Length: 397
Image (cartoon, rainbow, N blue to C red; front, side, top):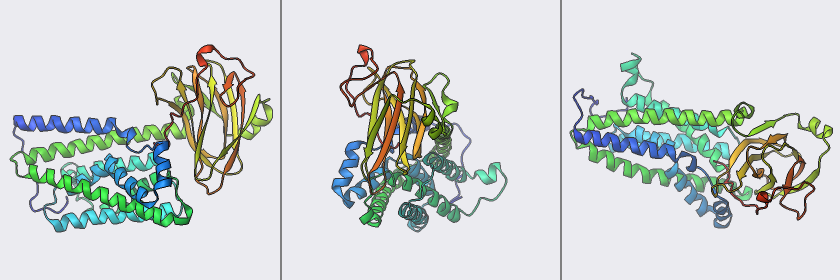
């Protein structure tokens, strides 16, 4: 349990009508947060360009907005302060969390230490469960053991949260000449966003603390935090499985197969086209082709010795604007395989180059497709595939 003036005792009597309404309100809030999770960390092309043009103030702004849209981080902070009643305790625990995530944010980003963002976010989701479980005195009630030292746990979990923030920051177009200043600006923004959210949380909790139903509110809120953390954990682990074992998710979906022995396949295949694509320094680029449903398409691409983040994805013809389906995400210097599309539409790759120099990609393709960068193609396509290329893919989510 966090240090408090009085240990909460949850009543067993029936909840009042107001408490039922509060429960419904909180449940709706959690569902809204979970349903919007996929939009909390994305970044559009326009936002990335504004970073380049806006300098360190833009990094600060993005840090603040990232924290305010980072539901997992905010939920953890909410759990930390839930039963704290003095300014000294609030400052002590929040400072411990801030120092924890600041250390790993700066260290990991400055040294280009990258971890799988799905796994990091899964651990962060479990940290939300942990803090809420501690708030309901779960260690003593359900496990019959004393809880771990809360200050050490908050520092440790803060270090993990910092890795999560670093993975997002390293997705931005960082400037190597002012890298440390970029990192510090982003971190200052994070702290400003956290302080803004913290003030609002304290006002809400203070208002409910005066009500007779505060104990009921406490019980409901912390159990909902546990449920929310569990759902987020499952979602992140599902995303991790998609990125680490993509071949296991083809049944009833896009029939995409990949082979890690790309160089061997490249020597054995008579490629129809060989295309050179230059990814600018600290930049990104998409390359798409029009593919026909159920027509096999083979590919092999290789960068000139440099690893790039890539997302192989497709957009159905006539689909909802901005909608795309991702087949494979990874970081590598090459990839190969084949795709049997389940829909007509554009299919291709998004590459992100974090290096300070341009990277050249050689893309070899074979099958029934239409190139969008030339007027004519060697492989005729149905009329319904004659459409303009659109940039619908956001960067890293």
